[in-house]
Image 1 (cartoon, rainbow, N blue to C red):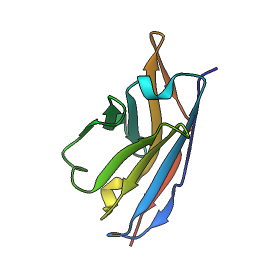
Image 2 (tube, one colour):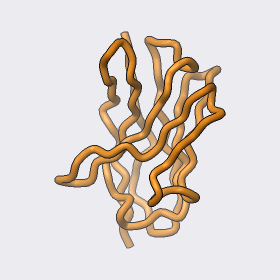
Image 3 (cartoon, helix red, strand yellow):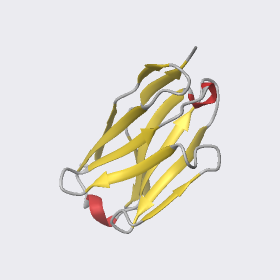
Length: 116
């Protein structure tokens, strides 16, 4: 069964760094596009980063470009999101996502709170 489990969230101050992880199982991890989404309190879930082609292709929304780095370890089936220079607006629940078999699969999410 497809399973995604995020971890690594926490409380940080502006400009701090944090790395999120997503442990994936149940599918051919390296063959699918992986994504990070985030959802602010009372907001909508928005895609923020993708990685594909065995990690050779990445894409980011403008607000995180240059600050966040998406990566994958195909040996361990782990997707990561390294977040640097965090801002208050980065506060959200972060979700790992994969689309396969015609469906979206999600982890339960991990909370990141940026506060001064």
